[in-house]
Length: 281
Ligand SMILES: [Cu+2]
Image 1 (cartoon, rainbow, N blue to C red):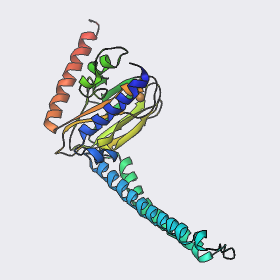
Image 2 (cartoon, rainbow, N blue to C red; image 1 turned 180 degrees about the horizontal axis):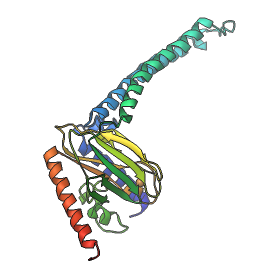
Image 3 (tube, rainbow, N blue to C red; image 1 turned 90 degrees about the vertical axis):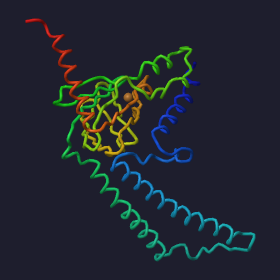
Image 4 (spheres, protein in one colour; image 1 turned 90 degrees about the horizontal axis):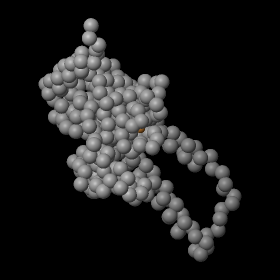
């Protein structure tokens, strides 16, 4: 399979995967998801409000244009008025009105942006490192750290002349071997960085898309609704090299007791592994 034939497949798989994570389908897929966090819903609401403002302006501008073109066409005997090329009153109106529209849009935008950046009072911190090509998750001070890569089935199917039909692979290119496990109803802070080039950690349902830059630590946070545990999928959103399309993200949001049990087991497993690796005294 050539790269040219693979590209539409990747797009189709991405669309199918995103669709599976959302309740809506069809036309709903054209829009961004409302998501499963407070912030993602605020971003969605903001996006819709501003979209509506744009629609109203577009209708007004195009209606005026079309009406003027038809009403004052030459064949109806319209004569251009070259005496009134300047009108202070009109110019003041078309300057002041957009200023008010911009202010009306800037206030809720700034409010949401400040909230997005506010990582205080987080209950769990995970360091996320993007690398070519996958993710590394480190639960700071919890003794748990692991790599998360493209799952084996997708990886086998994506190889040149693999003979595996990608449509037979569950969540093709959107599945990983070890998902990021997080608790619901908890403010989870991410410290995002890059190990080699710039990547971007993007999970649409959380409203989080943050660059992973070598030498910098970017912060992000999310708090999944208590009643919405489940699997949420994302992808690297920064063109990071040859296998950029093969480093998906899967987040497994679990109820708090299930998460605590998982964390305990994972910490015990990594303690065992490091004890086994340590040289004998
Ligand atoms: Cu990447």
